[in-house]
Image 1 (spheres, helix red, strand yellow):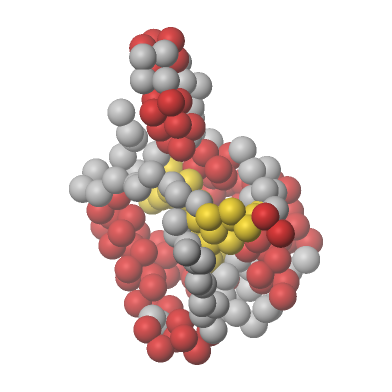
Image 2: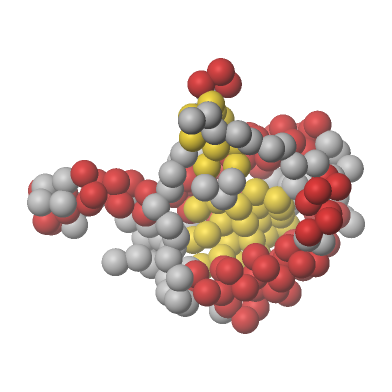
Length: 201
């Protein structure tokens, strides 16, 4: 059975969600995630071999060089559009964020980056634990996916001229996202919102 995809146009998206709705929905989802009331699902992907890419569960099309590059490319292609890149801290830290923020500054690409900071590269931890549940790494807890102490991710963006904010309290998230969106849309500066979430066991 062939898998059929439909490319959503901007009009399709605007018909079901506004930027205000999106910010409120993201804030609500991150609040539930950070308090442990919901967990991130196991990631599934659909390969797109022709482009050396894959569709991820968010859904997103991401090349091997990372979602920040895809977000910057989207902004470069559509400078008048608001681009939001949501990424886990593991993917963020190992995806050369300094280079991405430098490019955003050098080429005037104000993108909003939201980092889900649970101080763990949980995709790696889950993969190791599911593939080798009785293995040495699982038994000893040495999966090498712990990102604690975490860097101040917002400061990486600030060092490249952007706006950065850390959010520790889920109640503060909607206002932080609104300030970051203002930075991107009005001030024309890239932004990072470092959302501290509950650390997985």
